[in-house]
Length: 56
Image (tube, rainbow, N blue to C red):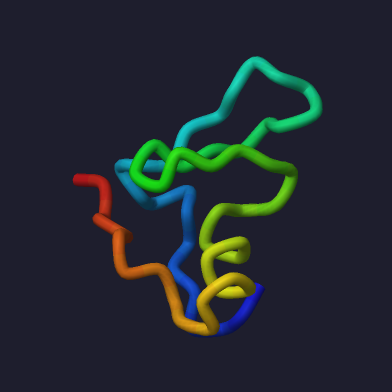
């Protein structure tokens, strides 16, 4: 994970799915995969996730 990426586990949009092949998901971007969504966003855009919203 890039050091500036937010921790998805602390984001309100992060969820764990029931799908063994795609266990991590982001409700904001609608993506599922094996990697944390913030890593996918960084690799796609070159920037840290802008949708991160800290859980309270």
